[in-house]
Image 1 (cartoon, rainbow, N blue to C red):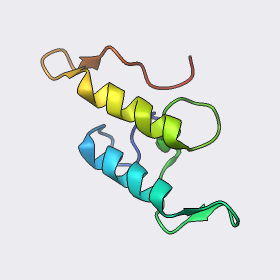
Image 2: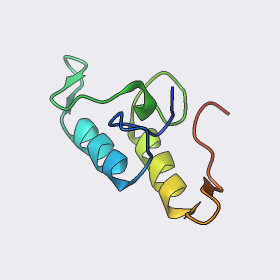
Image 3: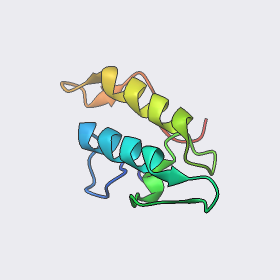
Length: 79
């Protein structure tokens, strides 16, 4: 699993953040489904559920991303 790669294109960028936000905004708790499909990487914190905490973690990751080093101070995946 590439944590943070929500859309499956093998990169982590704002497009993943947008797709995750769409997934959550279209999520129906009664059925446990969303009209938006996401990959396993959407579980950015590795808890086994996809929720607003994943969206927050992804936003922190991207806001602290350094393109020169290709790293972020925010670590994705299980801690």
